Image 1 (cartoon, helix red, strand yellow):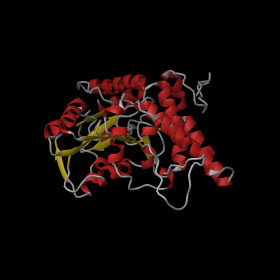
Image 2: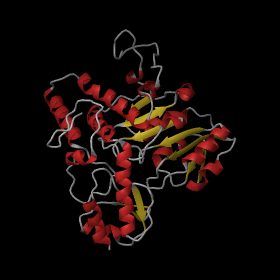
Image 3: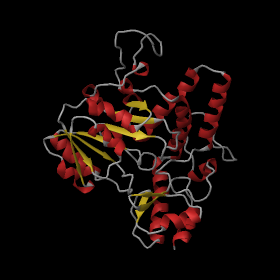
Image 4: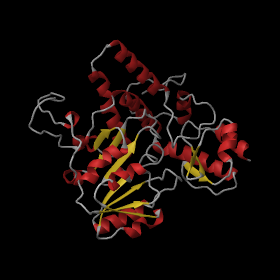
Amino acid sequence: MRVHPAGAIDGAVQTCRVDLREALPLWEPTPGWLNTASYGLPPRPTVEAVRRALGEWQRGDVPWSVWDVSTGRARAEFARLVGVETDDVAIGAAVSQLLAPVAASLPAGARVVVPEIEFTSNLFPWLVRDLDVRTVPLDKVADAVDGRTAVVAFSIVQSATGEMSPVEDILAAARANGALVVADASQAAGWLPLDATRFDVLACAAYKWLMAPRGAAFCYVAPAVLDRIRPVAAGWYAGDEPGGEPHAYYGPPLRLAPTARRFDLSPAWFSYVGAAPALELLNAVGVERIHAHDVALADRFLRGLGLPPAGSAIVSVDLPGAAERLAAAGVRAAVRDGRLRAAFHLYTTDADVDLALNALT
């Protein structure tokens, strides 16, 4: 991946670093986009890659295996982003889909502790099973974990409010009581530095802060818990095929991959065609620099409203009529739980913040 003088980045996979200011021309947002917590905006290499693949599909120019190369690229880049081995990452289409096998592997009546504010993708997979699901306030999650707890499941950053969960406290309580730790990183990965090896399972939808098309999602499964989870959704893409064959399509015996690939779901090709260059660009810029940029803008927004900084790229404020005033000014944000939710990412600028503040103040 190279930055050219005009600001364009090609699609070659490289390990070079890209300055955030040089990368900014790769996005073309209409001013006022403060809604990455709903969906992220794709960089030009992602848009061009998807358009190219759609043309190939329309004409029948290439076999599907050409597009599937992007699945491997995206898997490797996500692993790099969260500090794990590539073989420990499974791919799918949605967080709930990737967490369902974890829930299905628990015995009936097993206790699962979840924050009461949790997004349903990390709640419904537990609720639809015959499990003892306990929902508690976010700041009480660690206290609710005891020797009867099989799993504690939570989002690292909460979707509704942008609050960062008390990860250290939860991890300490879970480890002390032998509970599995299942984290949803959909609102964290891409702007918050993460070490996924600290969790047993970490799932992430890629269409938000990873700026990929919807239909790509990733799941880290720690090797220590691999055999405790039954791959109940296994299909041809989860198979292990020795002898150089990428996949065998027909007949027994069961032959699952020995790694987290056994949890793979057949990929939505074009979603991964778009995900690969987006993730490569994120890693080239560096999540530490993105974190500093995003949080600085979010805190600037809060200070402009006379509120204290929160240290998160997602902010939630109670301002009656704020959504209507922002919409009238062309600022796109969201309302969650009756509060304005604004999100700031690497393509957000000071001008976007000023546009929102002018509308609100």
